[in-house]
Amino acid sequence: MSSKKRPFALWVGREEDRTIVALRPMTLSGSKSGQSDEKGALSRTVVPEGTTVKSGGGFTAFLTLLAVAGALASCIAGTPWAVRIGLVVLAFILFACSANLASGEVTVARLQPDEHLIFDHPDDRQQVDRLTDFAKRIDHKAPALQQVIPQAEARETLARALWQGTGLLARQRDVRAVIDDLDEQDTNGLPSDSVAVRELAAQRERALLALDGLKAELEELESVFAAVVEASDEFAREQEIREATRRAEDVLAGFAAPGRVSPEDESDRLANHTLAVVEGYRSLTHLYADKA
Image (tube, rainbow, N blue to C red; front, side, top):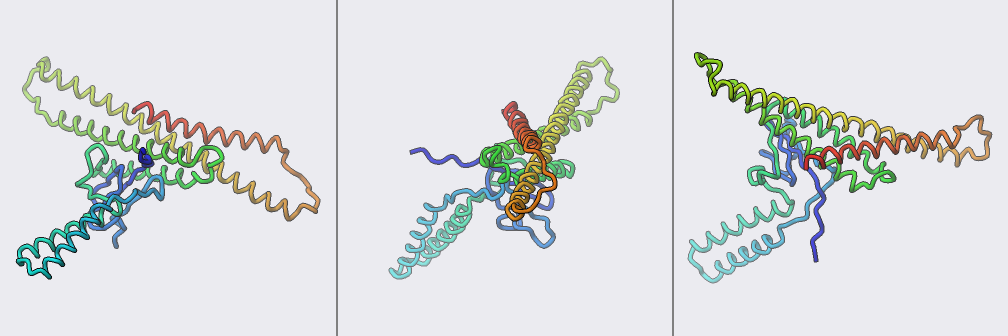
């Protein structure tokens, strides 16, 4: 029997001097589970909100119980103190591992290279915050859009688009580092037609073009995010207004109606809002699918 596929989700952790985007829960430095400290330097956002990871600590917990039982038995049986101490230390280590696995969390240092991104430059961190804020606002509206797009599909699309966006930011950061490295090369006194100097200029031009392309992709993603936010918000508010008018209709059914919106106008507006939401999510899907 095949195991159930884990939903695609992102954990965005913000520490005092860096931001981490990961494909699994992580324990941030200085605070268990990324809970905010007194200064608010630590925070964690999950997209989609409320995503949990199934505990993987059952076997480790079993080993912990065995180690504890062994330590107790050795004390009773008169085992040498060195063995007793060793068993107690082993039980403590297993207990600590079990606690982390029970929450599905690992430290940032234990995350695999292909399952997390780290940003420490203020500009990069600000852009991650902006993209994450867009995602949170869209995710918040997902339940109200259930009639238009399945909630699970909408949230996975959102998380994958956010992962694509942070990936673009990471590539942009790497290209900036290449440009900085090229700019630091000393060409004073070298002839302009030198092969090395010409290759340096060509690589710098190539890097600048790549940087412009990445910036354009990020701007496109942000514009799509903004469009989905607007379309989702309008659709959700229209739905709330319709519910309010239906409740009013139930109460005012026996009273005169001075003027009402024609069903055709209401249907047209609903169709337009629905189309805007669907097109927005379709654009997000195309953005990350094209880069896969």
